[in-house]
Length: 123
Image (cartoon, rainbow, N blue to C red):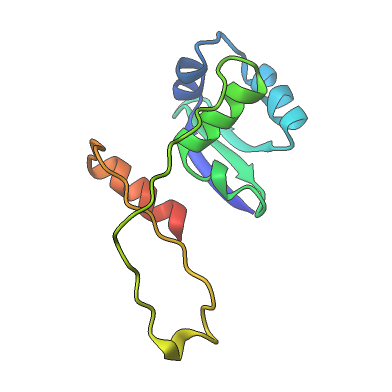
């Protein structure tokens, strides 16, 4: 299992709900997740993420899924456009990595923390 590190306050603020840690624990249990640990003094929350839910490895993905599950906000449907970009994969990699997925994402405001989160999620 992977661990999503965040803060309890950030979760409550993002959900716009006044929850106790027990409330969140029950919600997560019903959602198929569980709290690994919670440090009240540091307000550090660690949530176990199963291998089949890589979409929850980023805080944004986690909150988006939780909002949808709790009927707070429906998931957005993103428009995908055909691209003129081409990805060239060396023929020697065919047996090592037979598939690749790429995306061009524009108009994002990325700071150091967001870039680190993207790198952590892909690892």
